[in-house]
Image (cartoon, rainbow, N blue to C red):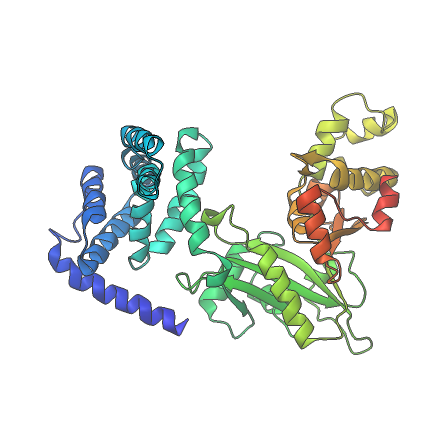
Length: 435
């Protein structure tokens, strides 16, 4: 990270030198003047002045309010798209004379000018972070305005190139990690809330591990992190793992690494997969440090199970539940009732197995967590009863959680079978639940 800080300082120096070539640097700009600045940036060849101009655009965007930022993105979408007439002329020229030269001309014609613009903005100090923020806003606006999809495709294109595995830095996070990063863990934790510094310190203790990917352009901002606990046997309940009490490993050496939380940190990088690389590297790191760890499993939430159950079985006549059972389940927040859940235990477990293994969306599991782990080569190991009795766990899945197992001997074959044939790797225990 020290090298990146030096690079950032050099970019700041270059940008400051180039400011001498700008008119009224630092003044507040209108959207029209920012559009002109973008066009000027695309036409400039001087590196110092170009870096300074890119920084001016980035700074202007960072100072905008939310509506102005939306207008900026719409401007990129409308004013910096490919020109249809230029594409048509280049296509006709290629069809008439299909040579390398005319093909290159056609390729340049179909590439939107905003792609080059984003690449130039990325050179500015803070440019990468700004572009990630732009896409986060774009993804929210995209829900209301589908015409922005081509712009999002361009953002995703450049971000995938900049955030490929070759640029990612793998690091262990512990209590000695800089506080600015530790604070980010508390903010970004998406699965099991970190309630404060004491809770965070417990999760970073010597019987735990936390690993993250960083990018050189965002040195103090993790992209994704995973929390690991070491246990004797495969853990089936989350509350003991989240307890502030230290695990007593004196009587028995742990043999299992439990991945109990994986959190993506940057909403603007949605659609770029880091988790598969991270899990593989974590397994390798633990293998080297602790050769006595033989099992690598998750203890994962099932976030949409009750939503699916309600849609499929509770709002219409059901051949699965009897009328008395349906009556019980029509009670408000029935999943918080121990007695009702116990009455439905066998059916809930079997339905959860069906949901995870058989419910599909475009030939892939309906459940997003299942898609993630199966795509990484895991298998569905077990479904655990009363595994998460927190309000969130009960309201999402009636307290059920699932173990996904990462078996080093099967990861590659599981991944290939899943990707190529849609085959889901299932343990014999879960297979019996489905039957």
